[in-house]
Each structure stands twice: as C-alpha cells, then as structure tokens.
Amino acid sequence: MATLVAVAVGSVGACRPLPIQEVDLTNTTWALASMDGERLTVPTPPAVTFHDLNNVTVASACETFSAGLALETDSDALEFAEPISRRTHPCDADAKAQDASLVEAILDTETWKVVDHQSIELAGSHVLLLERT
Image 1 (cartoon, rainbow, N blue to C red):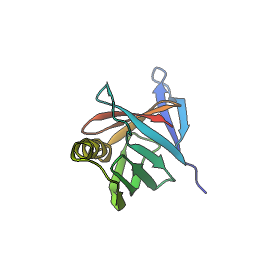
Image 2 (cartoon, rainbow, N blue to C red):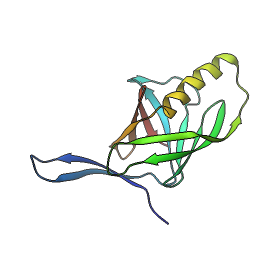
Image 3 (cartoon, one colour):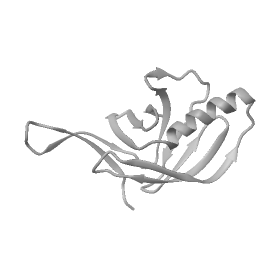
Image 4 (cartoon, one colour):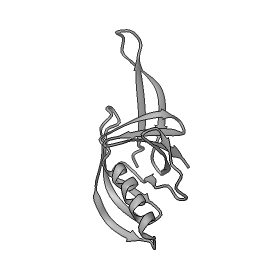
C-alpha cells in the first residue's frame, strides 16, 4: 500500500530544496477553517478526508460525496474530480446556499501547500485553510 506524503520545500540560497514540513495525508481528515483569511462561523464546516492517493470524501452540513483526486507531491498541483457519488442531508435554503459555496470553493482547488503539521492551504477561486481534525 502506498503512503501519500506531502512535502513542502524551502530553499537555502541557490542550493537544493530543503524539506521543511512533511505531512502524511493518507486516512486523515481536514476541516475548512477559513476562506480568504476570514474564519468560518458555520456550525458544521466542510471536511475533506484523504483516503489514499486517488480518492477523497467531502462531508458538509448538506451533503457528503466521494471524488477522485489528482495530487502532486513534488509540486503544488491539486485537483478534485467531479463527485462520483453524492448523498444529500436535510438543510434549510440558507444553509444549503452557504454550504454549496463552501463546497464549490473546495472543488475549485488548483494548488495546495503544507502550512504546518496541523494545517494545509488549498488555493483556487479562494484561499482555504484546512485544519487537521
């Protein structure tokens, strides 16, 4: 079984890259904590569970779905595929609209980086900070 390990790198002068942070994403869950620098105030923020090298589950207040994942451990590229299976949960109209915008921001991810062992950042149409749960 392969282990998904993400390494953020820094550089020392013109020398080779120096690993400064390592996070094993396999079988971990990360909850959305902020969007564009603003802390979320929703009761149930969306969370992303990385199952392996190719699959994630996104769970939010109004839905849960599985999706494919294209993650580069030697660059900053990360993309979510279209959801494979979707289960909806009862939500009122306001919660559903807010939930949909947060989930869409996750699905719009183009790049990512390790902030520290407890935080990762996803960037696309928005900059998202996710914290390990």
